[in-house]
Length: 200
Image (tube, rainbow, N blue to C red):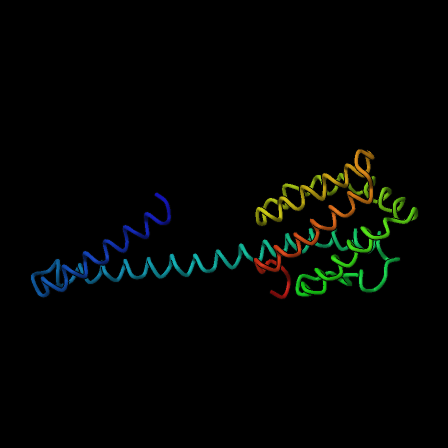
């Protein structure tokens, strides 16, 4: 029996016992003694279920925040390793979840800069080197990203795809970098919207 069916049965039983107690009050041992006990048991069970449900949801949220933080650390490392030479307006800083507006603005500026001027040769080589050494880690973390929201998962899959594309040189590096940045932005936005970040 599922949790929802069990709760429904408890509520129906509680209402039935209450009606019996109301209309048959004082009619013998069963109504006068056992029915109040059964009402008490139903109320206690409902309280336990709802308290446990709140506790379980809180634990699940904390677990997801820990997962998000670990994944975010890889994104922070990617941004800091490859784009430290760009202007301050293109730097997302620490890229913490609570700094959502700054993160989004900095990534937008970085994308605009890359689309306007392209990537310098030094940055291209750095990104290619990074993707070559880190792509497997990003690939292996896809199942971890699936524990968060659907959009977290999709953004992580696309980041991994374009990192593989950069390493295999099947896509132009500047194009792939822009796609990676767009999906980092999407990842950050999803965390903010769903309050899945430290300090939410």
